[in-house]
Each structure stands twice: as C-alpha cells, then as structure tokens.
Image 1 (cartoon, rainbow, N blue to C red):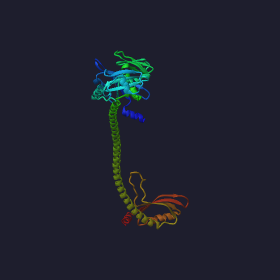
Image 2: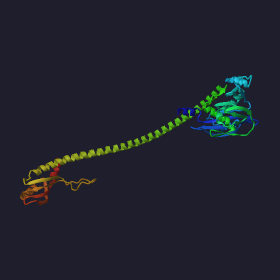
Image 3: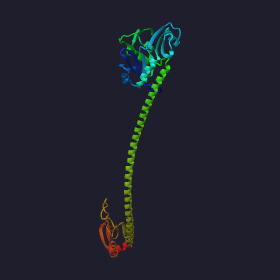
Image 4: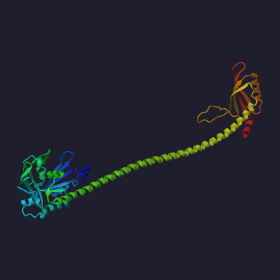
Length: 409
C-alpha cells in the first residue's frame, strides 16, 4: 500500500511515450499513453503530432514523459565479435576516434555483439532545452532504437520495423539493423496489446522504466536530473492538491460543526428563554399561592377558633342518651367542583347521631333553642331504628350577632 502511494505521488500510474523523428516535412512526434493497472497495461491514447506546439497542447504534464529520440542526428551501428563489456571500448570500436566529451552514447550489449547508438550532445541538449521552453518536463530519454531491447523477448516476429530502421531478430537477439525509409506501418502483439510500429519504441522505453531495466549510457546523470525535476514538480503539485483538499475538508468540517453548534446554541437559547419565562410565571404563581395560603391559614385559624367556641357551648348540654356520629361546622352548600367557588353555609352546625330516649331528645332540642348563641334549631331527619332508638340529623343556626362578636374576638 505504501509503495503504491509513493508511486502515485512520485509519478502516478499513467505514462506517456513520445518518439521524435525528423523528415523533409519537419519533426514528427508519435505519442503513446499507457495506463498501469494492478494486473495489466492499457493503451489509453495514441496520436501522431506535427510540431512541438501540437505536442504541448496534447500532453498531460502531470504524467511522466519518456522521449525516444530517433532523428537523423542519431547514428546506430552494430559491432560483432566483441570480447569486452566496457561501453567506451565498444563505442570506440563502432565509431573510432570519437570525442566522448561531445557525444552521448547508449549501448545494447548482447552475447557476441553490441548495438551502439550515438548523437552529439549539442543536438540532444538543444532538443531537451526546446522541450523545457515549451514547459514539457521529460523524465527520461533514449537514443535511436536502444529501447527495443526491452521488448525483444515479447515479440515473435523476426523482422521489426520502426521509424527510420528495420531490425532483424533471431532468438531474442538483434541480428541486423538497417536504415529504413518506408512509411509502411506494421502491427505487433505484445502480451495481448496491439502496437503499431510508430509507437513500438515509446512502449519499449516505458516498459523498461516499469521493469527498472538498467541502461548502458554516459548520460545517466542527465536522465536523473530530468527525472528528479519532474518528480519535484509532481510532488509539489500533489502536495498542493492534497493540502487544498485537506483544508477544504477541514473548512467543511468546521462549517458543519459550526452549524451544528450554532443550531444547538439556538436551541439552548430558546430553552433558556422558555425556562426563564416559565420561571417568571412560576414565581408569580408561587407568590399568588403564598398569598392565598396566608389567607387560608388566617381564615382557618379564625374558623378553628369559632368552631372551638361553638362546639364548647354545644357540648355543655348534651344528654347521656344522645350519641353523636358527626358534627359539621359551616358545611358546603354544594359539592366541590373544579374552577368553581367554594360556598359554605355560614353560621350553621350540622349534627347527626343516635337518640336512645325520645323525651330526652325533645327536651334537648328545646334547651338548644333557648340558648342565646343559637338563632334556630331544625330537625332535618328523624328515623326510628327500634322502639326506643332513633337516628337524627339536626341543623343549628347561630345567632348572627353572637357570630360577629366571636369573629371580632
């Protein structure tokens, strides 16, 4: 996973191959775009372009660009019967007395032969400079047909045609390289990929990079500088994109959190306002209840005082034959109902009980009627339970003046 992430940051998974050739009509560029997936390579784009201006408009500068320089300024020669692995010795044998300070070379070493390709540094550096002036940052370049060695084991054909050259193959070895000017286009199958001859060298150069194949050149330092120049730009762009994405996500997260916080604060403020309003209402209600409670306590105290007074007077003359069941002081005129006033029969005492002597009961009633504090006595109910026993309910109305005097006390 880390390897894939590192690869993505450094170069991505899409690669562009660009072969540069030149004819009487001017420079021609054969562009090939390859995308690497987990298991295969896919051709995503290919095109023939005329002029560097078209190349600039077509290329995606975020993809690594591999340039195969195959112009008339590049010379290729095969050397047979070699008995050395020293590249400079092979170059000197192919091109005697060559001043290597002024030339770039690239060598394909084989069992008994070598393919040597050279070009003047001035020519190659000039082309690279033109690319850079057009804002094209190449990652790697190759001379002539040198990149072809990366695909030899995959090609079954014995004759390969690429721009400017015809290559004879025998047992995955280059037997002969002949200049070729025909415009006939050949097709080759490489592990299921169909490639035209114009794009074969570009594909081979990309394949060599993916396979990390080592090359034999004297411009490795130039290639490394180009590669790191591209990687630095890409890393900067990727970090910039990641940073922007990170800050966008961060800002979005802050915005979402702020909204949630703002909504929560709004809800809490509304709750506080409602609570404050309810608190005020409760305070007012509590004050009202407190006032009413004080009134009730005052009235209750007064009522209790009057009730005690009248009950004391009433109890002084109760005969032994009278048994009391219930005494109600100022009874309700109507049953209690919600949101209705409480109505009392003022100056009234209701007494219920049992009488065991009829004559004694009558005398007791007469005695009550003679009391100064009593205005009237009324028998509301009188029922015989047995011969000498009866239940009764009487109502005593207090004398108004006596009631007021007690109230003032």
